[in-house]
Length: 95
Figure 1 (cartoon, rainbow, N blue to C red):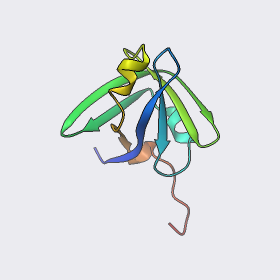
Figure 2: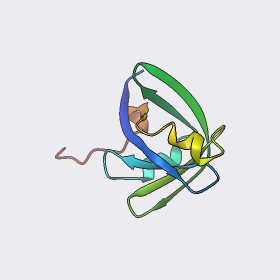
Figure 3: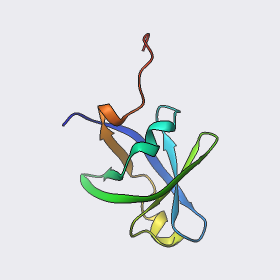
């Protein structure tokens, strides 16, 4: 499978375990199609199911299954989000 890093978890948000996500492309639409996040950091990989996702401007807020507090959410800061190239943002013709 051809995978690419599409974003990174910045920090937790709120008291329910939402995560703030930075999109590497600056686009957010493709995140709404993901049913699970493949997270990678320091040679470790975790796959977590998406419970909820919303965007505010260029910031994405994601609730992942099993992350139910800001304390747990903060432990995921710096983890990259990987997806298949097909699931990533589309390239413009000149890119």
